[in-house]
View 1: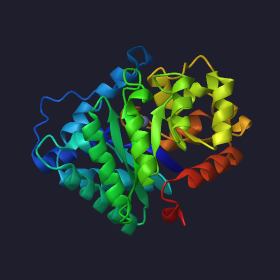
View 2: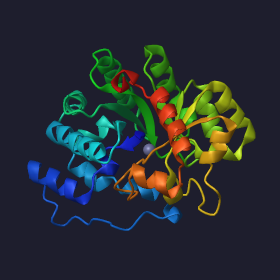
View 3: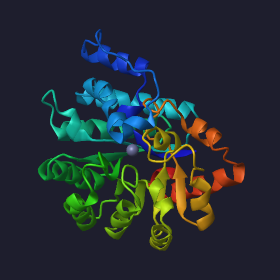
View 4: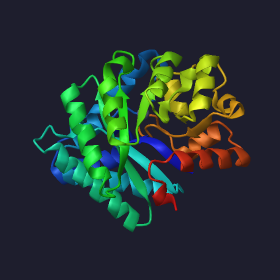
Length: 307
Ligand SMILES: [Zn+2]
């Protein structure tokens, strides 16, 4: 099993957060750990609020390093063979560390994880709602680290898709294409098929979620023609209301149409799930698992690590 869409901050469990808080002496005695699963009524906006607590302990290079290794170790124990862990370095500079220091720490963690027998790639997220200047600083770091076989493997555009549509981020797509940085984009999660369509027309080869594209035949055909891979995240999609539990989840619909799909967790802690659980919930058969696995291998930004 391979997870191509897993966020660092949203995948740290309570014990891991407390451990990281202890390392930096962060006082979490008043912190409220919300154990209830997110509900679709709150939508993506409410879902995203749950990242605040883990983010508070990820404000040093040391803890970004520690957190990535903690997560990598857990994924290894769970039986994954590779993961692309993503995070937004610009959200980790509140205590005065530079984004470069944060990305260096993530790169060191990826190298260390590989030494410990679990290859990971790190994807840097630009954020919807942040300034062009900040996002381009992140994208420049990706360009810089990519040339060094650093474990930093690509870019993502994440955040509140409902409020901030793709049309505001032409510079993101333009920069990634100009520099040859592999990129994905969260689309078709809080917005509809048109968001997936605009992302793939901007050259995205991977779409984070893309689940709502299933509502539109034309978009599905274009996904197929463009050879795009969708990073589906079942539990998360139900929790954010991206997909209604009353309808059959479109995993098999996409597969039958020949669209390349992968199954991922998005956020193991926020969504209270694991990749194994996602496969079980959707009753993925062994022959389907082989296809999902092959799709993930092909779409991975750093195939070298899978050789
Ligand atoms: Zn995501």
